[in-house]
Amino acid sequence: MKKVLIVEDIELNRDLLVQLLEDDYEIVSATNGEQGVALAASERPDIILMDLSLPVMDGWEASRRIKDDESLNAIPIIALTAHAMRGDEEKARAAGCDDYLAKPVDEDRLFALLKLHLAPGGAVSNGDEG
Image (tube, rainbow, N blue to C red; front, top):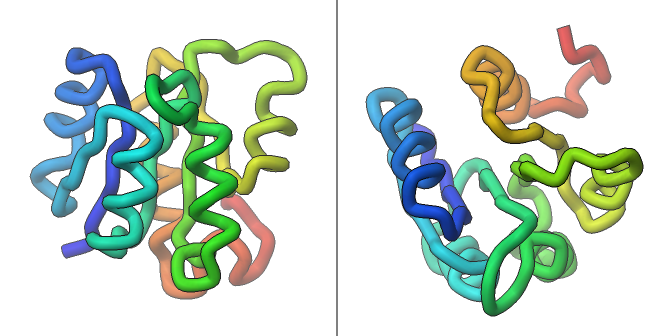
């Protein structure tokens, strides 16, 4: 079973993601960016769902730190944000996020992105998002 790290400070949002994913994935969760970086290192998840607006350390910085760590940088990060403003997706990708999903989360899109990034070879296998 693939392991998903959910980094989300709002309990309702975190619980929703857990409920959506717990039947198909092993779930680990963090409530701030610092915890997220630490859990990425200790748990070695297969993928990370990263809220960008987090306390202690925001998701932008947490993503940068994970991608700067050679032992972690292959883990795909999907940015989750309610602040879907023009340019945010580019900023998220520049911080190291491999994909971007605006809140409220579209369940079908979430599952499609998980499937894409968790497939053998991941999203870069053929450059086609299907």
